Length: 76
Image 1 (tube, rainbow, N blue to C red):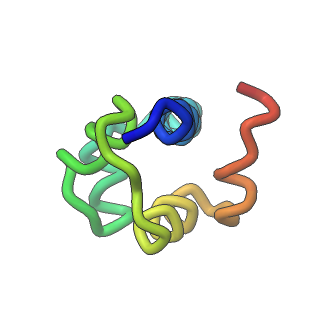
Image 2 (cartoon, rainbow, N blue to C red):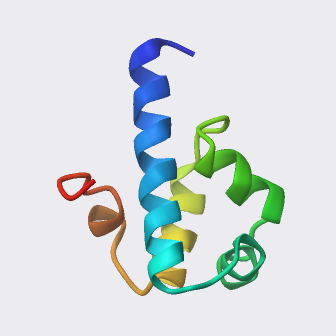
């Protein structure tokens, strides 16, 4: 993983964590809503794993937002 990819992973992970905490839901709740593994959510939030587009789409759906909104890092 290059530094550039690591920064992107950290940004998307931070954004997911921020959105999740805004909704006051746990990683387990988000995983259930998005139909992904809880460990996957944790790894993405920590920047250890890059989410696939399908995973991003599922997480965005769980947050009731578009992938574009989820990937907007202007406010973080």
